[in-house]
Length: 226
Image 1 (cartoon, rainbow, N blue to C red):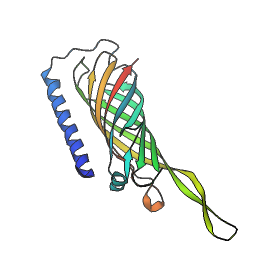
Image 2 (image 1 turned 60 degrees about the horizontal axis):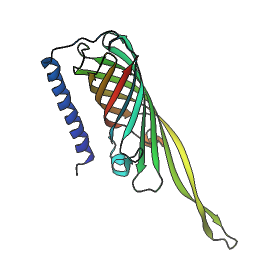
Image 3 (image 1 turned 30 degrees about the vertical axis):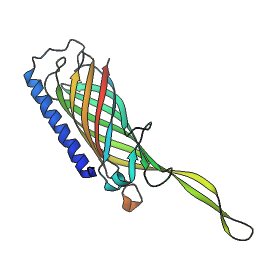
Image 4 (image 1 turned 60 degrees about the vertical axis):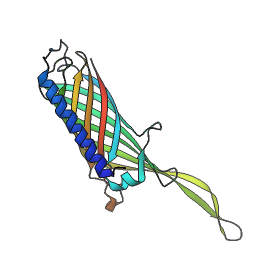
């Protein structure tokens, strides 16, 4: 089985190979310009699903991603055009991590990610197109766990009275970088695939926080324009 670092390296290498293949396809095809409204002028709703690999060794060894029983994360949002090949996306991302060795303990990470996306080349129908995106990330990591409730009986002995659930929110700030491929299906619809890297700096372990909860996501998604 690959180690966490090997998994991250393999994922990035695979994404780079896919991007290079797509770049080759772009210049091998005969472009078919999009009709109006085009990918350049539409506002988009988008949704994505993908896998996530934490960069922190502690999270890789002690937590597993679980959403509806699957090792995935989900994201979605709105993307607005602001210029030639330029868009302003606002992404909401959700990632649930369940502790492997502590019963009923989990971290739910919800982030809001305003960013800017740049597409390379012209928008042509059914032609691969590369893009790059940067984001500011505002995250809430909600840590939930169970603890034992004890009491003292009439003889002075400590006794177990049951369990209780506790929850605490850790707020964090970070940044993200995406490299991706887009494939327009029509003037206002497209399929996207991307590699997303995120890191966080505000909730350090030294200050009682959760540390860097970021990592690498490899996702596929769908965009619908209007």
